[in-house]
Image: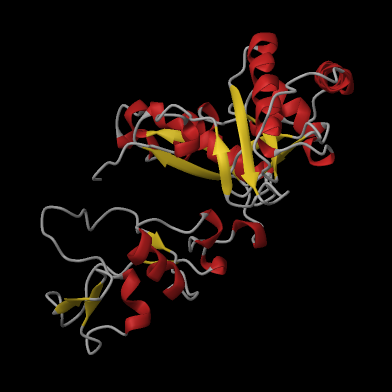
Length: 306
């Protein structure tokens, strides 16, 4: 942790246990620099008697040292980040961290976090071995379960999330899924009058958005190179609509039709996704099939005041 820039927190100051502080323009706490240099203030834990256990194993914190002006300005203007990539944070891609763990409040949060981790792996942001386990606090009978190294190791082993199981499917299984879908799509293209209605002359491209990134169908199609994951984490099945001279509306209808067939054939949730005026899936979305509010794609993990 030290090598990656993390440092232990400071639980108290020799002469300034009640150091004066002010609030920065973005809500951050700023101490008088005569008490603690600004560059070290992220490590300071405010003294609140009865709230903080000053005897427990020390906490470590990692500071973000990049420029966040553009990020904060975008939040101020629009209320949300521009995209995932612009959000400041630790760059796992450039690190060699393996076997890290995640602690969440509730067991119901685990599938959502697992969904996010798998998306990062599939996008190439992190490696398959970056994260090893996910532990829900509510599953622990008491914190003393983790006080001994042996008990901690046992808890980690009991909560290991086997991300490796989502990769390296057999060649025959991958081929079966890929052939089944390709055959159906090619059959649709062979029907010259299929979806031959009147559409507005709009340019763009469309894909089939498959919603469950842990589905065996998705894992096989990823392995076959038929699915790409865009920067927002959508798993998009390419049905070659970039190569047909159709209006965008017809492409959307085609993608929606294939999505319905996938639901019927493989019992997986899917819908259409398109961009207007562009061919690339990372362009601004023009249309997408709505998801349920609690779908892991939105990452509505429960907020908890620790």
